Length: 475
Image (cartoon, rainbow, N blue to C red; front, side, top):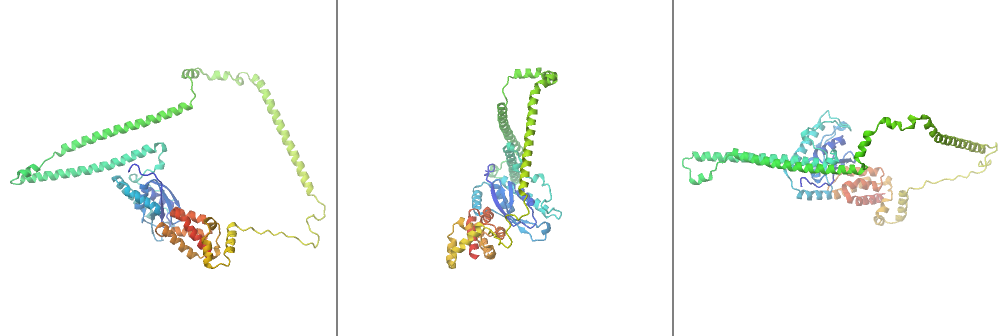
């Protein structure tokens, strides 16, 4: 599965971001782990990051979770925080199942080690006193041996081939390392065998059984044989890959030529070549009356020019008529405004009462729904009121605007924190603070659900129902 990890975009929650850390630094940490796609920051303290494959998401969870980031910028004196990188409950279960069935190879271990090295390099740059701490952090170059080529930077038409070559290189590096270790173990075994043989010769009375067990191998012949086999395998592999690349190139060329032929009009190549060979610029110009007989060209052009002049005159006359008509209408309008010195018809006589019309501002739908709810529960006991509010459908409940002036904010915050902990598996203070901030800004239920959904998924609407019933009950 190393070459075919599930190409499923995996989203993880990133919280506990230290004060002053900008998006650019976080993105560099994600890129250091590999497979980074995008990052959406919801507030200063948390956000959500997308990764290309499940392997990349697992690597991020293992490398970045509980990583302590330094505070930066004007908030450098603030205490540091440990980064919280987690998936929601359903995604965590899916990742756990995938991790159980995943076959880890030496290439995975190498990628994890390289990711940790890149993350350490970014942390050193963040901790530097000279690091730029604004929204545009200091640009520094990660060493070439620690870089990971982002998939989105590879052209789409070459992406498959390039990623295949990268995978082959990584697997080749792992195989070379494994071969080197096997060679070292084999040499060590041979040295031990030779030492044992020397000790057996030095012994005064070697037994027949001991002599039979001692076998001295020729290490140089063994090495040459293995090297010859390795070269043959490598040559066969190169030939096979060359044939595959040639076949792929021929297929692409055939498709390109077929597309070009489909859009090119069919002509006799012999006639086309003869036409271009015989064509002369002087001959082509000689066929134009404009160059050969200007008087005749003007005569032929005269009728067309007369029609154009007549059309221009007609357009000018129509424009003049429009201007005259507009002036006449304007004069008639201003004449209707001229009145004598008598009082206008709308002005009341001396001492007559004035009739004023007062327009009431129409209530907003949410406030009107709250007024209707108050009428419905008027005179009911507190228990009956709670039961009536609990019986409302979700659409009806979310359409009611709470009385924000009488909200018990501490109880709402406690309810939010408890609901998030039950859904996510643990408390997420950053998410709770973000939802409370929206509530204090008088956001509607749909906005609160949108803020909670990335973390709580399908549990977000149910939590919003609880919060909205509490808001209506406490108010």
